[in-house]
Amino acid sequence: MTDAILHAEPLIRLAAFAGVFALMAAWEVLAPRRAQSLPRARRWPSNLGILALDAALVRVLFPVAAVGAALWAEARGIGLFQLLAMPGWLAVPLGVVLLDLAIWAQHLVFHHVPLLWRLHRMHHADTEFDVTTGLRFHPVEIVLSMLIKIAIVVALGLPAVAVVLFEVLLNATSQFSHGNVRMPAGLERGLRRLVVTPEMHRVHHSIHRHEHNSNFGFCLSVWDRLFGTYVAQPAGGHEAMQLGLEKFRDASEARLDRLLTQPFRER
Image (cartoon, rainbow, N blue to C red; front, side, top):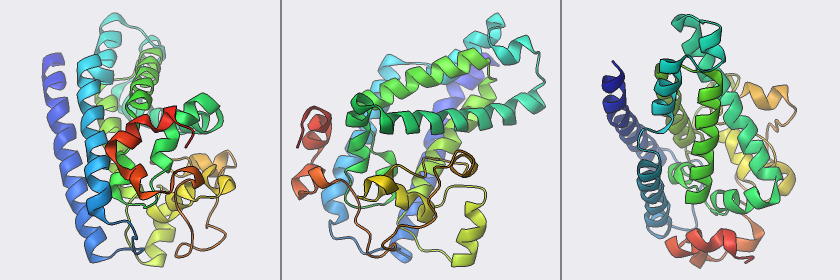
């Protein structure tokens, strides 16, 4: 069973990623929310290049990643859920929810600790907002995030199934919440009661600091409401709002080499 989970996990994640990416990319073409001034041809190669580098780095440094950590902890009875002998029907959904809360908290911290913000700001420097923005994170941030995730998985003693489900959900919702897609207003209002929608998360990418320090959620929208970091709409409206960061607005900043060196440059 352990070997089956370890072998199936990369294929499950790859299939889910490819399916969601294709769906969101098609939706963006058929029903875009905003016109883009910097074309995909200038942004997508770099954003997808960062994704490829991140994936390769994680596989080299963490061959079995968080799923392997969950199986290791389970085999040794380590972690809160293991000590409580929590049944699987409860441990799996609760584990997914707690991981989502942990990622929300991590996101908040990366915004407010200057050294971590220098890493995370590469994600925010994108002057457009589409499915590839949700895949654009600096490799050093990805490594730190994986270390944090492994520590949480082991401390809680989460089931491997919960970790696989969360990884798939995190990747899918990150792509969805960054989509440059239009949807009926009533549907969007209903969805954001439960999950983070593109309309909700776009506020987080505003050029204004008080707006990009809001709406930190990836999947569930409840955390921002609960902890007072929820902003319903941007002050200037979605059509007029500027995205990105003041310091990195030049089109050259969309190049792959500039993305990789950005945390180490002031401008």
